[in-house]
Length: 414
Image (cartoon, rainbow, N blue to C red; front, top):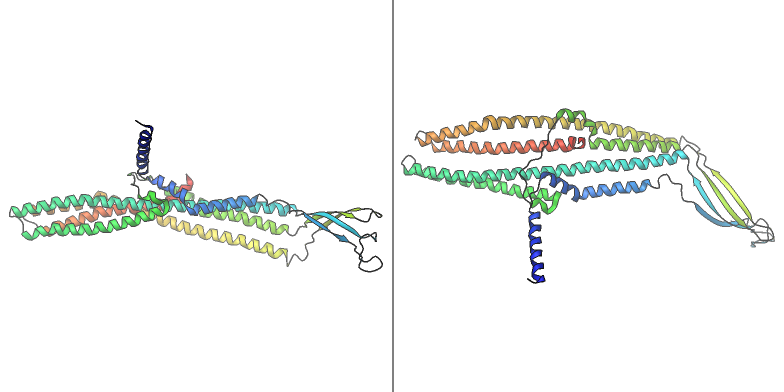
């Protein structure tokens, strides 16, 4: 075999293996990880955090020094006017000037920059949970729609058996010819409901594609995520909610800004060093000059700034309390929904579904014995179908509520 044929064979095998890898079932956790890697919102949050880290580097640094050059005591009148070397006081100078903000101001600026990093990191965590929660709900929505469609496949088989039973009854003389139409009508109704589910599944895949791209079209695994909801733990650690942690970071930043405003009352200072060149007859000079800032009228300058920063602290405290109350209310509502759905699902599986199956068995037996009406049998069968679909709906609602609770209040506890 030639090298070219060997290479072609290997490439074909690798392409086949690549197709197998791409066709691997998409698990719940894998969908969340893909969504996190591909999210443009998370990329934006990451850039914001990196920007805050970059700005923290020069936060406490001294201002850049300034170089100055000029002429001192240039004569404008008199016998020496317009001359640079006639008067002993005329000199050309060049020097450097450095300003020194007070230590309290510099430390406060460092604290502000550090708190900005903390705020950006907290906001990124909030965005991360939003992305994961959205991807989780989209995955679950598609999963349960596919469960319903799988149920309709079995219902089609049941309908075929049912149509055969009706024909047998008519052949045996125990049924009416008009009864042969009913299974066909039932099949049409099932087809209409299946079309609705197919439409909803297309939308569900589009919703999942929003988070994970083309991999949303891969088949899903059968394994559901183990989202265990511990109401007591969620209530106890509600204050750790990421959105509340943003307020903690923003409060640290506001406190540092208050200290920076207070430091404005303290003097900054600076120093100038100048080399002054005169005519060689007079000799050159060196000058040193110190400057000090004098905060005057603090009641109209520094104090209003301090008050504004203090009011910002009050605002953050009030907003945090409002958000805490909102989250407490949402948590209790979601927990109530979750517990209600769990009880309803248990009753549906343990009581309602067996009763619906028992009802159709009795109606079917009566119809086979010639003592019942086919319409009653079909009505009982529709009730059973509706109950089986309702159970899937209840499971979907419970899983969605569990995901809401987990990604809003529980994931940050892991």
